[in-house]
Image 1 (tube, helix red, strand yellow):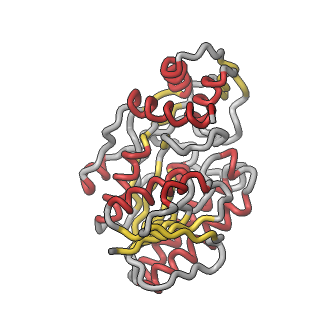
Image 2: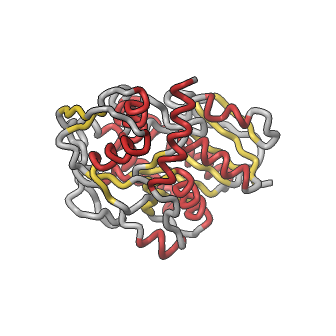
Length: 312
């Protein structure tokens, strides 16, 4: 069996990636320090003989015994509520953690895929966002710790590729949702879903007309794996190009949950992007990938999970 290492493997995306790799006949070593991940996300894998868990902070040297074929570097806080609370660990995992993950890939001669983000585009002046857009980022704003950590991650990845011939892949992940998102994640869908199910006010920031594009987690993970198998070394957008306003998403969740929760409007956070939509032409061309799960189906699957969590 091939051996894959997933940093941040107990997080929302990392745990789904561990599941996917195990189903594709990998032995998986998951590394996490639970700063934002949860043991609950990997509890179902505890007795799987092909799954190994190491509790470790990847900003410190990573040691893995034996051969490693694949590394997926997903360790990082990923929601504004998290990375604004812990900006220094966010910067450290993007810099030191990336350096250590790339060093492990070099030592093991492994292919490494690193998780970047649509946040590298900042509050974009180009719409939709293509991979050749350099972004509009405020490096000293409250979101800068995450945006610049990921921009640094991309720069270091390309430096390792060009200097050492490392087999690298970079995925720019757009808004993703699905089971295993934390109830207090702070991002739109888990927040709205939790508020609606509890009968609380639905919190909208600004006028609710800022846009996002929401991709169901299963589609995202498939796209990431296809990118890993490719030979393409530059960043690739993976996300759902169907754009909608935050208020439209809130309306959808009210409809899905049959909630009577009212809306409450609060000031827009500093540097919150007004628009966000991936151009996925490159993913379609080189990976033959595009999302398949429609919003109605994705929200239904997510609703089942959130109901269980809230009632637990």
